[in-house]
Image (cartoon, rainbow, N blue to C red):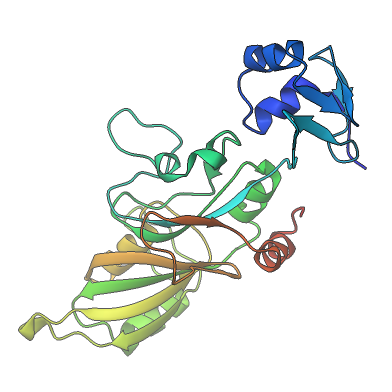
Length: 250
């Protein structure tokens, strides 16, 4: 059972226009609740149990939206920015009125998995340092990444500000050859999300990240069919896994 809300607020949330535009729709007799034309745009309605139609079209109400975005380089993880394109700018219009925001951030030059939602509780749980939600990255690194680095990351490394990272799992996919300009290819799973953390961890062992892509966050894996800049809604299974992992709500 849901809770009653003003009909103009419900319809604005679902993208039917501003409050004044919705008042106009109501005056025109375009809005019905349970088959009856309504006259008051401030009428209290339970969108979960009462049928609302606008111009004969049923309103499929939902409070939250959960989107997986394959973030490209050059886009900032913000809802607005005066200089750069933001991840919200990449979303189709059908999702913008929900006012989703990025859960955490990826650096401007980092690609890959970014979750956007308007569910503040889920976002808080996923970002809470106490939850230790793992994040996995694929990276190309200038220099030879070897067993010594695996051991160092497993112990935790000191960043440039003295912070010692939690144990991280480093997998070397290809060992680089600096003499011949061959980069190392790795996957790294970290349990926290400090500013520029992956880059700074490699910096601490004398190496430089030249390409970085997030491929997983908790149980959520980047959909390999998503082109850069594309998004899709999470499936029910993905959302269930994510909310279970975060201790949040569905």
